[in-house]
Image (cartoon, rainbow, N blue to C red; front, top):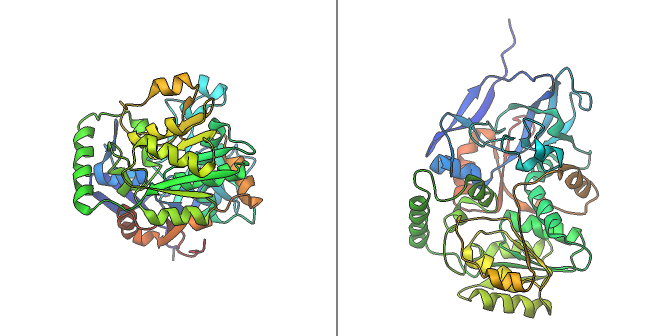
Length: 411
């Protein structure tokens, strides 16, 4: 009697509101690829957005697409040209792999390559499944003291590393982090690990009511429309900065830097020196409060919400000669006090995904320089992925993790 063929259960989005668990064929790795048995995959805001709306800007789900890009697993088969990995190796997956050695790859900024493959960005499938193949050069072996979940969290952690690198965070810096979502918290963790002496993190005093959220969601959908009002990369990156609930406020013109006061307590737990709850303050008033807490203006501001008033507050708050990095991006056209930044030589830098961050992230986790474990608040087996996505959509907890190996549900 022939052995039963393994099932490759996969979470697939077919269009707006249409999310299904389906069995896909187990892929065969190419010469430079590895086949992985997936273990842990985190839910990102972009996954939820593709499920709810079927698109992010110009990236439209036109055919069924497997979701998931925050992932780790075990190598079970290697391509003929792969030398650095073998079956049994535990690895973290960098979801963006260049398809060609273009000018951006040559200068080490492959994240800017316009033809890059990226998991769960149409038309590329993600890895929320039992078995998945990936470019072996973008699979990184995990040390024995780094768990699968930590390996999956290297993806959001990498956004924080790239942001802090772009900002030039170093010993003794004071840092202002706008927003206490997952990316705000990993930016906090990395800033402290890189030597920041004090970090202020902002959050809303109380979340808006359901009616307000529904109104904001309608506004967002109207502005997106056919073709969208924002570049895909802007909204996709914003969606990585928070959950689907906070995404309703991506284009709000209010003094709202985060949605959940409970996230501020998590920020305190993972190392924030000061917490600043925002209610109706103006951007200038927020900047004054940040200066009051630190005793001076911060050298670095990391903006993780994409909200216009938060960007404005970041410019006003940052020390002359300092740096503001934009991680969360919302509307393509945003009103900011640019002259205020120019006359004080505040450098404004963009951040798009990450590059060359996995080795550093693995070293930081292995040496216990950062602790990302508190970020995981919910866990679901792959069979309950639909329930997991509902949990994430409601904004419950912080990071929802899906466990893909039915025989190993451990972290």
